[in-house]
Image (cartoon, rainbow over all chains, first blue to last red; front, top):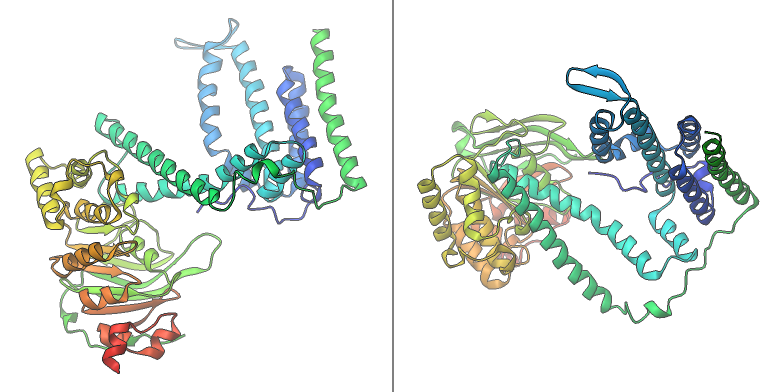
Length: 261
Length: 256
């Protein structure tokens, strides 16, 4: 059974104790700064900052590893494509394949940014109950409808995964093996996806009806953002200041290095 | 630990069991053991009911027997051969509690044909099996319907047909009467009463167990607590109460 994103929300660490809104602003500023970086020389700093924050969060490495499984497929795809298709400066010739310097550089840049941003996101969502994080977003101005959609998505995506597991088991118990690439197998897998989508849609209608019957929609326009119960301490603000300063540092460094080159 | 109560001597002990479970234990990650040294033998042509409170381990036991879950310890044998996790055994069928979990193809016919097609049968053989299975469950008229648009009772019978099309010798039913109205519940009971396979039914519907089964196993906290006829197990009020169950109404009236 897969754990939710906030399975380790009850640990104790400096990041866990960081007030939700400050943490949201600080870590999002880091994420935006990382996405701004284009210079190779800044990548080691990005990696160090990411690792330091992960260390401070006390989240187990197994958590990060388990969440990188599917994004890992994306990384694998670009690893196989970019170095052999992008650029003109050949580093190594392997038979008919040419390894290009520009492709390798692009791979390093994209992979490091991707992993760093993903890791910081996991720190953000893994160190507090998901509901608290969404409430913090609401108090910072996220529209109520988007907040509700986010919560419901989080709530039901795990059920979607469980439904998928059960259906796969049922197929396996009737002899289906997805190992062969055949038209029939593709049809069956397409039917599986279709069935899941139909079930999800039907369930979403029922969930919405249940919400309506308890006043949802009527109260939406009257709902004010929740008053955060946690007070912002001096320590929270200092941590926020440091994190935003680091983020700004990356942006400034990026601009300066780009100008020099 | 409460010792297992063997309330009836098993005359079939000379025959090879259809299911032989020995000291079976299983636990999910980060949770206490769901099955703790469960032992049971089910013999061919038996109709066995499995009862117990929520969380007793009934579905986990079924999934272990089918080779879906890997036990932490213990052995499971199916018709004399050990169960290998992940191996397809067409001689055993499993009808899920929620038929939506196993109906996935665009028409009833295709869904019932799914199992025989996976078994590599010819088109004629598949057609014969589908016809037989639909006929057995009385849902021939639904053959061209879309499974998602069926009623709950119809889905249940179609799901059963999909398993029967593989012609298993043993069928596990997980809560077959869950969410059914009286009419479809009666159809399922009538069907189970005449089923030719060895059956093992997990159910909270104790009246169904009384009508269909000639042997009952009480499972709680991952162990088989009692094993006997429905009257012997379910008419024992203190036993039932001690494990979160109640004596069925029909047996209570009989008792009085």
